Amino acid sequence: MSYKDLNDAETTWDTKVQQYHGGQEWLILDHFVEDFSVTTNALGTPQIALKAARDALDFCHHYPPANQEPAKTDLSKFIWPEDYELIHSRILLGNGASELIDLVTRSAKPGPWRPGPWIVQYKEYERSASSLGRDILKYNDKTTKAALTCIVNPNNPTGDYMNIEEMKSYIEKTVPENSTVMVDESMQPWHSEKWQQDSLISQSKWIKEIFETKGIAIYIMHSWTKIWSCTGLRIGSVICPTTEHCQDLKKIQVPWSVNVCALKFLEVVTSDAESKYMKKTWEITTNWRSDFRKKILDLKPKDQDWVIEGKPFISWVWIDFKDKNVAADAVIRARAAGVPVRPGVNGYGCDTCVRAAVRSPALADVLIKSWIGLGQR
Image (tube, rainbow, N blue to C red; front, side, top):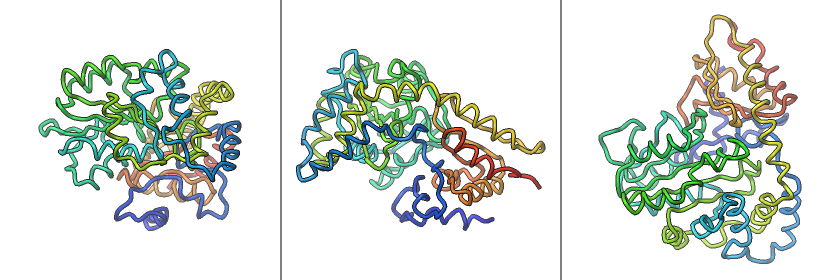
């Protein structure tokens, strides 16, 4: 085994200008079984919404609606059913969260970028900031004022999480006045049936007040392709601090960045037709993750100290094997079995770690079988 083997996974990326991401190896494996390298929903794509997306191809000779309706209204109602109008005037859909991350990074005031509060997090925010020439600060830099702060919560890949009061306190205490904050809540819908209550989505009044009193502009980012397992459709949204901020993003957004298939999918997946899908997600993910976690730790040799981080509700496990050679072997074994995982060494720089998605017990057992004997000397 060698790190050259791991780098084969990067061949689909131009690593000089692009950020490594999971979800590519299924293209190059002749014996592909299941993708454990991305944190998508273990249930797969909702089938009613998928059919609607397929049917929308019949209208591909038409432009998508420039106002993104009715999908934007449907998503607003899904996000905050108590009073969707609090969200509707401030929300913008995009070609995945990646497009919207770039838009906010471009529109924010010049100055340094800082992640927080964890040592490693989803790298697209840093890539965008670096590409635009912003200085990159350390997560624990307490001396330099950041013009743009980015927080991923629940944090991907570590699985760390701040509840709503902890999040508000962190922003109030660490974010400089007259600056911008992006909070990525893409994995928040897994929290529970009442996921909105522990989300910044529920804090429209506070967001308005902190902007008016401190000039802190908070953007709430969602990549909807994870919870609905539709990464190829590219559906993201951002809730801006004010309607005016939303208008500013529209000015620099490329028109029609969300296609007809993605918009129709969004209309249906947020409707009552797919309500059972979300209910089942909350029922099975924690149990499947717990079972998966136990099976991995049962493989641990007695002389090693493997650690699996992350909140119980999240859709993946972050495994620190405490040994870069064991982690490398885990990646190679998984690939050989047709169940690729996410190497922590690529992009994140965590050479002893691996991320693996929660999947059904039957599929998880394929990965577990490939790891029998892992770390034994």
